[in-house]
Length: 316
Image (cartoon, rainbow, N blue to C red):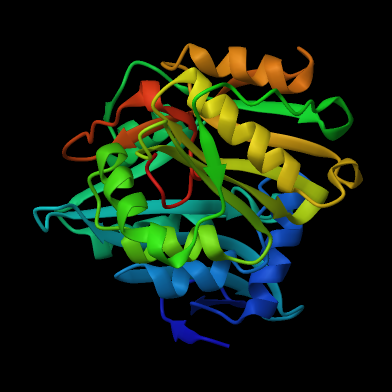
């Protein structure tokens, strides 16, 4: 079941560190229903194994043996060995909100963080609270937007000239990791390889006419019968378009899915143009998250980020 943690909760509530998949599946059902946070089924295992350290605290109602609240924490390091913690999956089942349970879980993960740098993606309604209560006060001016389109509206774009897309093979990983390091200064080779190789993932890389990698991306087949574009990194609009053409062609039974969603930095003005291209101009987008830090902000080349990997434990 995981390790029981003593967090001085109210009677009838126990806290478990890294519970079994069965309990994570309960959590997934709730967040699919109430938040539209959808993951691949293997996501939890990926987090538990691909990061230097990973904690998922879950409060459980002992009477019904059901998930009540969750928060997770991951540890990564940059190329200089400096620590970066990330917080994700902060959630409470609606009927249990306002009882202080989630706050105790959050305080617990911040104890692991100590005086190190920590980041999260703060939802619009929570961003100011994270800044004032937990000191996530260092942030960019721009937000990350949530985009949504019906699968029935998806259009596979024409492949731009001068680009070649392919599946990622074993001899491609070194150069792909080198490219990823131009996007994100974190030691995430193990994570990214596992992420792009996980079942239910259609991943591609794109090269230019000289054979140089100029981007990579993936669409994940997730719960809720949704497709998630995450990540999508590219040197140019045309390279991003080439990736979308190849990835969409690789999805089996594309029209059997309900929708495609993605999260992207609104600092990249090319993203709406790309989403319009692949949806016949039928997509919705709204302000959703702000990337916040406690000590020091990390910079990313936002003009190359057409789809953020995820907003739990991947900072771009």
